[in-house]
Amino acid sequence: MSEVSIPAVIESLDAAVARLTEPGAPFELSQAVLRGYDYPVYASIPANLGDYFDFMRKHGDAEFLVYQEQRLTYLETLELALGLAAKLAAEGVVHGDRIAIVSRNNPEWIIAFIAAVSMGAVAVPMNGWWTTDELDYAIDDSGAKWVVADAERVQRLTPLIDKYALSIIATDEEAAALIGAPTVQAWGLAGQSLDWVKPTVDPDDNATILYTSGSTGHPKGVLSTHRGVLSALYSWLLMGVASKQVPELAPSGSAGNSQPVGLLTVPLFHCTASHSAFMLSILPGRKLIIMYKWDVEEAMRLIELERINWMTGVPTMSAELQRAAQTTTRDLSSLAEVYAGGAARPADHVEKLAKTFKRSSPGLGYGLTETNALGAFNSGVLYLANPSSTGRAVPAVTQFKIIDSKGTSLPANEIGEVCMKSPANAVGYWNKPEATASAFVEGWFHTGDLGKLDEYGFLSIVDRIKDIIIRGGENISCIEVEAAICAHPLVLEAAVFGVPDDRLGEAV
Image (tube, rainbow, N blue to C red; front, top):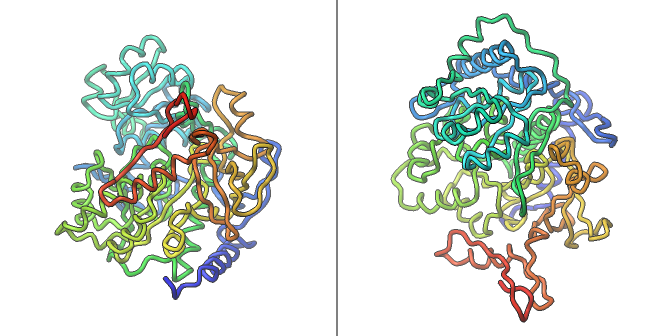
């Protein structure tokens, strides 16, 4: 590490980004006015997600989805999705209608999502853990009349079918048998014989509503456009291409694969999975291995069997994998990129990952549902040099600023609220104009996170504004205490929160 000049690596990365975004380059930039504010945007991205998914054709017979005994090629997946879209259109679904998806991860989830956005409907992924009451709220809030669901979720939805006149499409035969519903596969095949043409969908048409839980009350539906989702995808693609032009950031060696292979470990109703795992796989033609549920022994079996070279998940997953790798006899040498998001990774885990997976590039991303998971990213030598940071802004359309309680921008290394401006930012919260006006201000999304930017642009998250414990007038960061606890070798994960205290106001 002492031989690597971090400023030089940053300079090389920025130069690569500049080359890739100049006029005529693959990621050429232009300007656009979105919702009344100026943004840098990618000049040559597809007009909508349906056009983006058409890129699946170039991978043809290459495998795309692997789930237990089920294997689908890129072309098979796309044809089933477009067939499902055609059948839904024949059944009366029109542009702007909401289609809910509530199921465990499986190929049918992905097929339904592609179908919805390709026909101009709005895909509404819902939390697979929700109870009937929670689903009741989200169905009512979103206005969805069509729901794609598996057997477990169908049972929870049954009391709501008549209440909302829901039409159910089953992901599997078990779910179909419960209520006599058609399956995704059956309608996907039937629709292929219909005379249907994809409708015109504009870049700023609504594409998705993803629900995010807050500290109080019901979850909020985060509404995003096709341009918003695509801006996030192309920013990550740009980051990947630029990083490979910097030797210090490129993963070393080769897994011997003719096709990149990824491991899907987290639920698709989170944008960490739906965006950075599923949708980001399309252009590079990555095969996606879908886990039934997270299990570290099963993950290692799949890594060895499928020669997986990419995975992302929450930090706990990579920590479990690193520990298990110490004693396993399985060959995990194919792993080149071990990424995480959704939470902070203890600093000592970064070095452990690099030492255990010799050719890997550990990475950590920072983003929110409201930003389509786009934000900052830290990987490779930059991450090893600054493991407590979530990285620099993902190029080339994302901006960060840190503000104080009065909204004034703060200089480097001063702690304040993290704000983000990007064409990937959501439109706002579905049916919640006041919450939208509070969080989205003059093009900037106010994250509610406390953080700071250093002189190189590295972002460090200190805490959630609402998670600061004030004990006897002293501010205590929950994240800092959690990090101290996690430094103990026998601790895998920790949670710290405040409780009322008669003498001090709050206690840890």
